[in-house]
Amino acid sequence: MEYMKTTYPSLFGLIHLILKTLDMIILWVPILFFLSIPIAIIAFLIFFITQTTPILDYL
Picture (cartoon, rainbow, N blue to C red):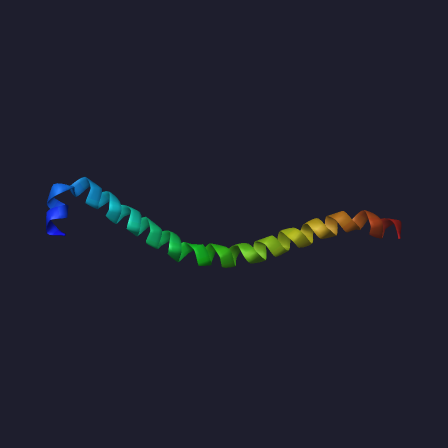
């Protein structure tokens, strides 16, 4: 592994950076997923209410 570091420092650094980025993505995916659920529900409710209000007005 030490030989790899000295021969391909840029490649090793790139792999390290990719792994760090993947680690951050894996960390943030559940957080963003849980945050997006209530936003999606609220957006759907707003859409549903605005779509059904004309019918309610006629009644």
